[in-house]
Length: 349
Image (cartoon, rainbow, N blue to C red; front, side, top):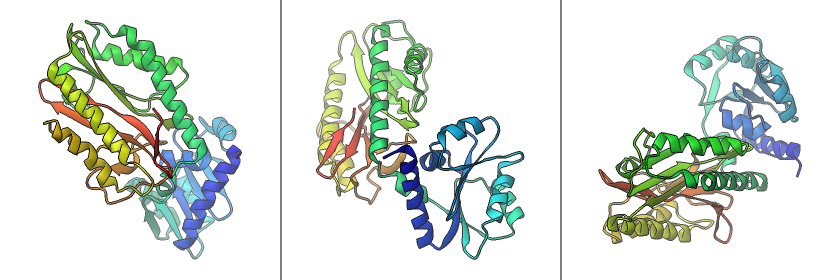
């Protein structure tokens, strides 16, 4: 299937939902959703989907890029505010049906559009995201590529991991390798040594790696806008017995969760499988979810947590990242990217 066919199919799916909900057109303001329906990888862009046309709104910084990437769209180069440009298009399509606007729009922008339209707008949540959840073959290929790029970046910096290097320096080396491979970071790289790894979203500091120390690296690369998200943990020098036991617990917890993954699996059971193993080892399980969806954004549907009353579907790509955090000592989180299939799952990383 060609690129343009993929985007036409996605837009067709959105039009079908709009028709079912008796909505005339949809204003898309989420950057990831714009990419999903158009292929545009730039910033500062909105899109409007009507029954006949897809409009991409951007400014003169991105019009050349948009023409190359968005062959299924009519490119609108705005001269003034984005809200005014969107209102101008929506005015032409304010028929009897309601106009839908993504809830990611700001209140100020929404007020500006309403001022121009003088017509009620219907806020919608998760319309495009519900389609984005199930990944097609092209999306899966991009995520696989993003995983390979991240793996290569990590492999290239391993010789740098020696006592006296700082967390910030090591994070910088990883980021540089990802750039040298022609990619971008999925998110801000987390490097945490020793006790700092007990903070799940630690911000790297000038803390130096010591002779006998532990390392946590949470990082990811992108391929055509699609993210990978991996976490690796290891030690430098002598291995502490408590750390070794905790590592084994997290490793087994991750395996138990992955074994539960299949089309139709209860998400709460996947999450619980990991926590049960960690408790059996005598540790307190992670306070965050066991995983999350992955795609154009590093956090997508579905969340893998005890509070989520949902089932996995073939085509979901999720992370599985159980963890143990011991304040003042260390943190261990192991994270893989996993594709849900009809018969089970495939670990992409």
